[in-house]
Image 1 (cartoon, rainbow, N blue to C red):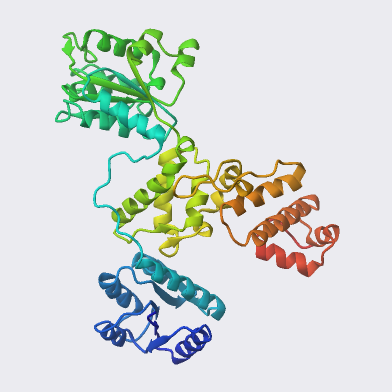
Image 2: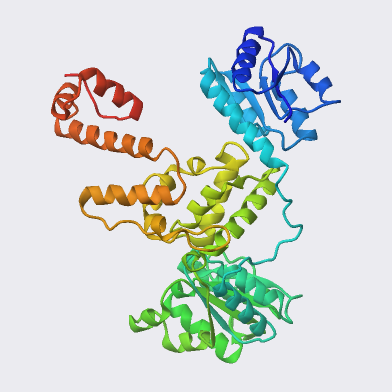
Length: 488
């Protein structure tokens, strides 16, 4: 293993870090300025680089930039003043693994360096991502059925109705149907009918003639004309106003329409693909959707599975989105640890693929280090919320096989103790560490908050009711970040 390089013009900082790392049997090499460290890179490289940000001559940011250009996978920890927020932001923008704020706790500093060291050692064994990614990802049997349906439907001009929950990728499937059809060289026009105000939707779909209404200063072609000889994708068709449903039915029936304010029919040679997350049969029964239009759209129905039905695809999708978001930001892709991936695969994710993509974007920007652990995920996922929902879902490993039943099956709730056991089982099955500390803090916080509400914020009274000392409750309020307390 290569040594850890320490770059700081303060000899005392170098000495403290050298001695602390030596106690951990970690080899070090020190430099008093960035220039000497840059020169050393001509002949050697460290396992981890720790550098002060403000030094005579080149700064730590300059060193970080130079290192990342030549060794993008090398973890760099920046040491900065506690109050220097701009420096911390600049560090992360430059690709730093993390930063140490002075004055720092030496044990925490060593723990951070050890984490960076583990990251560096992992880096060499990581496989490069595939050069080309399919337009739609999925290995689950439910997605294979979708792929087969796309193959059968792509050579046809038949109208297709795509159903599925929000975020399952309905527009991607519509685009794939177009891309593999004889119309592939013609336009693919997508319109979310729920996103256009009712008063504008008719003009948006069919266009308008000059002077058709106030502000119509010129003739405008609608989406049907823009999609001529190609494909028109109408998303959230279930939200289309009832009167416009009649006009759409006429186009699907005879292939003609009129622009708003127009008197000459316009012929439409367009393949229509519609999508909705709603139950159209129920909307027909409720009188909100025309039954004849429903039958016109429902020639071929293609249902997209939710992520709950294809959990084995979550690792594949997560890796793809992490690479994609890293490419967009010009940074190295983050990676999920095995335990974090198992935890992620057990989440409910009601927003489906779209929610997973947004989560991966958050991870790329906010998670420290290149390997993401459970504790690096957003708190609303790991502490209650969806984390609790995951307890009643089967946990999956990367190969798609269920986790052992002893951990995957939580105890049935029986009062608050049962709920506590349920949450503990969820965290343990996800591979989370420090479970007692996490749940203990939540337990203490809940007790103190409840006592403060009962005593209208009076700390002394709350401490007495809880059976703890005044100093203890004061310290706990600060540690747990509890608001609403006041002196007697």
